[in-house]
Image (tube, rainbow, N blue to C red; front, top):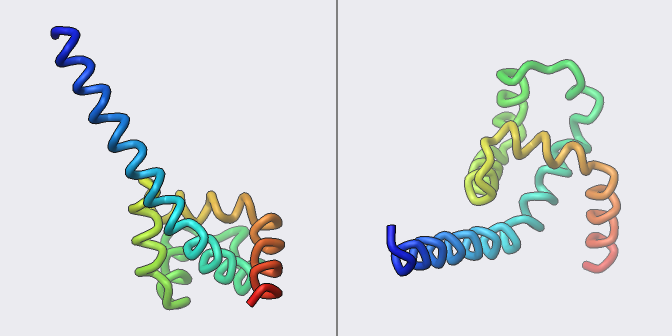
Length: 103
């Protein structure tokens, strides 16, 4: 592979990474807020749920499409996305309270 071809490939990869980061930065606040609402509502029930049960709860919550879009845009599967939000639950609760006060 020539140096020019390698540089072109690296440039394309960098552009794609930046595009995905930009998309994630736009969708992330909404997705985090929706996920935080889900977690706040079902907090005590999440501990011992199987993946299938968790997906059923998400569908019942009525935000499965939002989760699907957010997970896809952040290159995660839906369970990985929900779990990543769950690990940041305390920070998300504070962010939701602050945004509620600002509205």
